[in-house]
Amino acid sequence: MATAAVPDREAGAGLGAELGDVGAEDLRPPDAAASRVERFLDDGSFLELGSARVHRATGFGLERKRVPGDGVVAGTGTLDGRPVHVFAQDRYVLGGSLGEAHADRIADTIGRALRGGTPVVGINDSGGARIQEGVAALDGYGAVFRANVAASGRVPQLSVVLGACAGGAVYSPALMDLTIMSDAATMFLTGPRVVRAVTGEDVDARTLGGPEVHGARTGSAHLLAPDDDAALALAGRVLSYLPSAAWLPAPVVDPVAPAHDDPGASVPRDPRAPYDVRDVIAGVVDGGSFLELQERWARNLVVGFARMEGRSVGVIANQPAWLAGVLDATASEKGARFVRMCDAFGLPLVVLVDVPGFLPGSEQEHGGVIRRGAKLLHAFTSATVPRVSLVLRKAYGGAYIVMNSRSIGADAVLAWPGAELAVLGAEGAADLVFRRELERHPERRDELMTRYREDAMDVGVAAGRGSVSEIIAPEDSREALLGLLRALRDGAPRGFVHDNLPQ
Ligand code: HXC
Image (cartoon, rainbow, N blue to C red; front, side):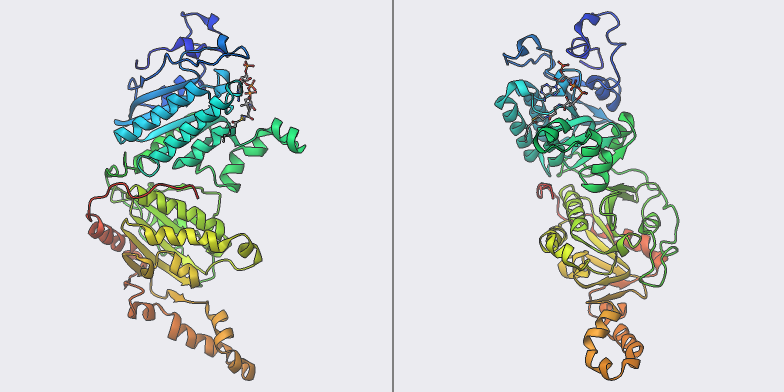
């Protein structure tokens, strides 16, 4: 079945089967599942599988609510000519709730994507576990989660949340690689009514788990979109950077010149002055190709997909415009998941370093910066894709090591002239190293700081001992990075590397 009508389901429980066969298709609301699937995929390419499936449950009147497909549209089609598997929950059938048959169809779809080596896209709009089906619904979720985990790191899994995503429904998106939310979407483990009943807290759905919450506070949403179609278009854009499976190459498109050719233009010389690192990214990657993820969460670290000479890369950059670009526990988790995702799907890593260190203080220590920072350290150290760093101004302390230094396996570390690499910034270092001298001669502070800068921090020192592979002019950055990426591209063939564990 291609784009042909599915009037029974579309006119199902919520809309009333009395719509009959004449005109039912025209009355189908745009937020019904089949309509969303059709708009997402290439015209006429959708083949539904399991459209006659109904649940077996009885009791609570469910036997009178058997709707073909059981509230989910699932099957396969193409997107920009590439095969993709897709499922979409239908809010008009029992609130898109998940019962045994509904779950089976989703798990089957994910399993087929894995066997076929194609991405799977889930369109979520669901009230969670179908309450009347009890433990069968819970086991249904278990089966979906198991399928998600089996496919993790093997084929791309995207979740597009376009309505409610409540209860057990939230964990499938969280197990997938990436979640996109429309402005009408909400995600919460327990809905407002249950929250009120259990805790007495009075909170509306949007405040509890709307796009603002997951875009800026939890990081659970990677991309936000104003409406259904924009969210679906973003899913297509994300897939354009990724291979169909870990063992396949990512799509290559025509190269585009960068938006400007002077990546150093907006970078102040003073290592403490802020600037937006996205201006540097724009001077390095193909024009218009940068797609930032989790833009409003952990803003001190910028991550996103881009292209260089038409080939996909993952970009990770400290952001001096936010918290001076420090690493902290949250940014480390953000970076770690992104690095692991790129590594799983074979995308080379381009790392722009301008970092004053890890954020000090009891809030970070008590918040687990050791454990959580270790995730980024582990992700970079274990990454097997080509990975190159460019130090723009400074790289201090533990953050220097963590941000893809040579010592943890970067293929090359480039640096701009004047960059500083050290255990501490000059002020902190001078106060510690020359403490006794400064007690006797406080007037020597500037002189001693200059000495420390020249003898220990200067990029020439790091280049001399091999921590920096080459010092390059800012305007040569793109060419140098491209040269490295070309030279590192054709290593041993890749297969499955690892899963994409939620961080
Ligand atoms: C069965 C459900 C349902 C559910 C909604 N419906 N959710 N039926 N099980 N989980 C049904 C409603 O009874 C209603 O049926 C129809 O779907 C539409 O629902 P409305 O509430 O009228 O729609 P709306 O106002 O748009 O609100 C949608 C909603 C709300 C926000 C999703 O229905 C809601 O809060 N549902 C419950 C959310 C929740 O707490 N889920 C947790 C489930 S427990 P009729 O016949 O009247 O049209 C869970 C645990 C698993 O998931 C944990 C695993 C880790």
